[in-house]
Image (cartoon, rainbow, N blue to C red):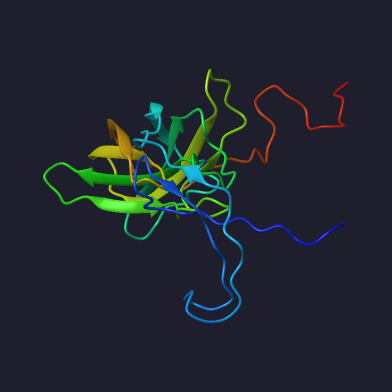
Length: 198
């Protein structure tokens, strides 16, 4: 099958410059075995910005998972759409960062993807939603109920080009104490299961 193949993400290359790559088995090229230079390549003349996230919205997290907390805080699911939701370890991969803040309060960073990583730290696919673009979501907890919150979803790439979409919404009230009811007696004028009145 031949020797294994490796890939490396090279960042901060000067724009519009021709370059070659050499590999070494030591931290510097002053000692050790050094490979032959690669073919010449030319970097792009300018960095390209990613597409801005769209269709931001929130809804309350499933009450079966969002139980009432001692501090009365709530969880919400933040949804957004983007044409490049998958990480392929390519130079044009798009990474996400989510921030939020209440009115007149400092911003809080909820999550951030790592450049060059194979998996996301920030959000996951939302396959159950039908939309023109692939949808993603992140569950954000620790929010105060009935508060106006400003959410920001940033999209950035390995060239540090960044765009963002903002969304403002009011968080839901505190989670209820009871999220399920169970009928233990038959309703009026109804028979118990299996019993047929004469």
